[in-house]
Length: 234
Image (cartoon, rainbow, N blue to C red; front, side):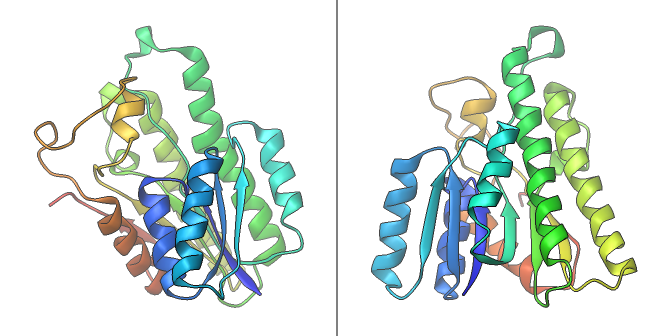
């Protein structure tokens, strides 16, 4: 059996993406820290698609050793698609930033994504139909000084993924690498970025997408021959 692996699957874009791939009868490996939310998502999917195999793994991907450990635990599963969605932001000024949070953000947004992508490419680059889709941001194509370090992590994701796809094509590999760059999306992203208990997009953000809309854009990218899915909020 072939599986689609999705990180950051317990809420937001990852959650909605899992539902859409389930609708396509894809077996799933769902990764996030929140095991309770993952279990609830698994039960929802299996109630609608009882024949699907849904594997959940509660892992903090901001710890690099756990990323390697996770991949080792998945060696008996045949991966077809890897979607690196896990990540978070930080809107503190450079002089005010919490370095523990900053380091964790870099490890998750950059290191974990790079490790998972690299291991997947190593093992599957010549397998027909394989794809890796990495989640960047509009902030990966335009500098936002208010979130400078976060912006830099997303520039990395964009450059790394676009470059990887060139490399794969030059090698005549069968895998393709793609990058989705969402505009503001109504998830817990702003809440965590601003270190707030809650955040309402309505009334605070002029234009934004829903997680379900963004998951639909991801599916469009998956089905296309494009490398980049740059989404605006309009």
